[in-house]
Amino acid sequence: MSDTLIFHNHTEVPYYSFASLDRFPGLRHAVLTRHGGVSPAPWHSLNLGWTVGDDPARVEANYQRWTAALGLQRDHLTTTWQVHGNRILTVDAESRGGSMGKADGLITCIPGIPLVQRYADCTPILAYDPDQHACGIAHAGWQGTVARTAASLIQAMQTAFGSDPAHMVAAVGPAIGPCCYEVGPEVVAAIQASQNDPASLLIPTRPDHARLDLWQANARQLQEAGVGEVVVAGLCTACHNDIFFSHRGDQGRSGRFAAFIMLAGDK
Image 1 (spheres, rainbow, N blue to C red):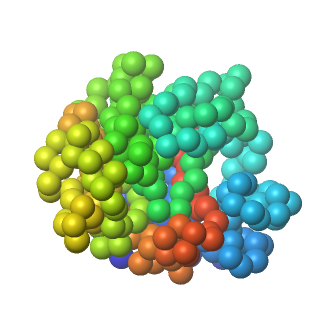
Image 2: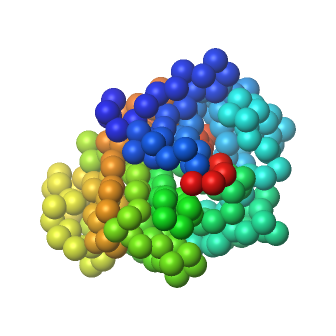
């Protein structure tokens, strides 16, 4: 396991946090696992995905379980309909709760609003600005990486809150690693066209195929955006599909785990 991640063996719902973000008392966050819920196989057990075939009543029960376990208000959770793009939405007190619509990231400067995204191999990206006391979260698979969603998250915080990236902290969460993520010619070409130094992100395997390093691609985007501190979990969801849901590791029949970030009060 990565030394940047701290495992919290909560009796009801286990989760991980980033040491780099834990040091800020006015911030709360977590990367949940697949454990602690009520869903049966193949979504066992804390499935938080509404569109993967699980019974909606069980999905809601899972939301109730994890929010109660972490002391959050269920009706304050704010999320998006994730579409593998780079749109980032700003959440205020009036818009909190439920889905904000089609987007792959959320930002806020309002305390008490848990910003939530769901994953099953795609990359969680969490960001915090201690100067402006603002936070954000994003979701980036290969399409989001090509669309530079991580950079869009930082730019959105600059525009909305006047954030200085040099003073920000960002974290790249558990996602499918370069050990397991072989991609074909379409993805290889898209990465080559959209990323700086794409050769360092692609490990050739067979003709027109390569293993893609989503971790470093997104970390690099954050660094290129000027973020002063970037940490990478380095934890592969496909290798650890006993801990996390993994679309590839579970052969396409899988649930979704979640990450959240929230301003808990004054910085």
